[in-house]
Image (spheres, rainbow, N blue to C red):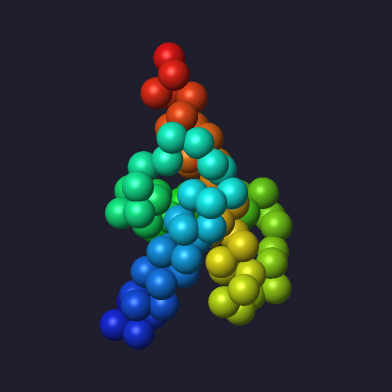
Length: 84
């Protein structure tokens, strides 16, 4: 992965974390926590969509959607674990 790809991936993760934090209102993890969740969620969303064989057509918008869904699922799982 070259530097440009890494920067784009981090940007997409940061945007996804911000969006997931706003969509999944609640206790939240603060700005920095939501951004980290977004980056991890980008990995999780990419893996999940790939495993399910679902495509988004590519591009930055499709990547942001996949990463946001992954981050939302990750936030949901984290909140379930925190409640238990």
